[in-house]
Image: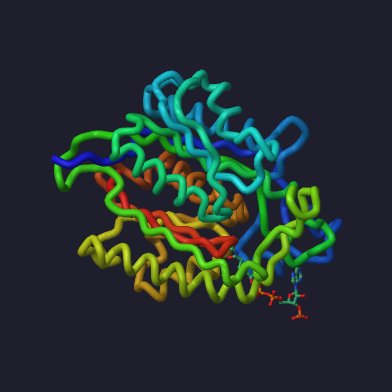
Amino acid sequence: MTRRSVMIGTGSALPQRVVTNLELAQTVDTSDEWIVERSGIRQRYVAGEGETTSTLAISAARRALEAAGLEGKDIGLIVLATTTPDQTFPATATIVQDALGANGGIAFDVAAVCSGFLYGVGVADSMLRTGMATRALVIGAETMTRLLDWDDRATCVLFGDGAGAVVLEAREVEEDGPGVLATHLHADGAHNELLYVDGGPSTTQSVGHLRMKGREVFRHAVVNLADVLSSILTECGLSPADLDWVVPHQANQRILDATAKKLGLPPEKVVVTVDRHANTSAASVPLALDTAVRDGRIKQGDLIVLEAMGGGFTWGACLLRV
Ligand code: UT7
């Protein structure tokens, strides 16, 4: 028997308002054709008045708790991955903790941009396996549209808002049983100028706007994601053919296609939500995961891999049996 973090519930939440490419093209110098051809995005959800990172996170967390048959008081650890906290402090995780009635346990935010959820799972898994908590909520929640420069057509068409959450529980399981099998995380700060926000409390005392050199980020993403996926599979003595599903960060359909091709993964094993959700940063992996769990594609016993790459650069992968 071995102690593992087992996924026992998933949930997600999206803002009410959908903005299509056609709607965006009325105010931005772009077109539905360009956005679909270059990114695969057809629409995004945009947070409105009263919708914040914490309200989305709370809704996603409630759905994950409901799926797990638990209540907030059963959760001893909340790790919330976000680039767009409600406030500079307190950590948005503590706002979520209070709303769920999980007070008294551990709660903090993780900032690793689009890889934030992977970093959150890695941290929570370590804490669960070392006994610091028994049950954790790992949440990815973002209101990325609040960081966008709506005059920069190269970035403002690519992002959306949302949240996804998973409940992990520490359990003693058989070797071939469920749970997180491995997590590989990386960062390389040498490329910060390719993807960043041009503001912050300690520099401009403002929030700033997202800036990206898309073509260069694209190139790094395909290389880093293929590398981390192949290293995690090798470490676990597995090949791409052993996987039931790949749940990738949803930045660009062409990145999903190129990464799958590089690894020799059939495209039908890749969960795709970028067309509906656009790039929701730390929320994108748990949003896609919950979508595929709820529509019945991901089932108990499946071997799945989560992967992401984003600002920092940060990137990572997590292999788990459901
Ligand atoms: O989540 C974090 C990780 N982020 C990513 O993984 C994003 C990675 N990058 C990408 O997804 C792609 O590079 C983009 C979708 C951002 C851009 O696609 P691209 O094929 O790399 O296009 P590009 O940036 O090279 O731009 C091509 C052309 C340019 O015009 P010229 O110089 O060729 O005349 C741009 O000005 O497309 C133009 N362009 C647009 N045209 C219409 C840029 N944005 C737009 C737009 N609508 N929204």
